[in-house]
Length: 120
Image (cartoon, rainbow, N blue to C red; front, side, top):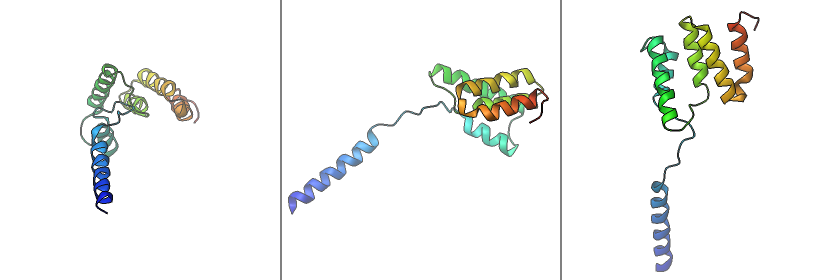
């Protein structure tokens, strides 16, 4: 009986220690993107030009960390560029999103058609 208790205690200690030992690296570089997105969706906080600068900073940090930005990042940047009257920069952002995340192609094509003045 005492052996079972000792083995159980050792097993529990090993599981607890092993669970805290390593952290799985993230696939994407998030930086402070989530607060930026939240501020954009709530329409509060920094202005669109400030948000664009913050997103561009995150892109540079991601490149320095040799990671990719998360899905939707360039789409968000493109929408900000549209709001600032910069359709060519928006188009580039949508194309980048489409290239990095092919699953977004249908939505990016929709936005690109709208940007070009075509029917949705």
